[in-house]
Image (cartoon, rainbow, N blue to C red; front, side):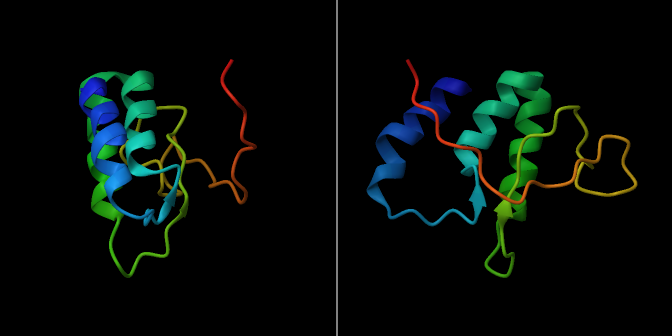
Length: 94
């Protein structure tokens, strides 16, 4: 699944202008979620993230949660995390 996402990032995504409402982008979110929680649970979080991406949604910073829960965005969830206000500093890969 990760290879498919990387293929999309390399060959499809550059063909259109940047328009993602969220930081990190949905494809970067999906890769992180799959690496952190595996294909099934990470894939579920990625699908839910894409479902939230609608024209009337303001977007913003939406990180992959540290603990798995499809409800981490709700304050009543035990896995709830407050969203960050600023993006992470860019760090080049060595």
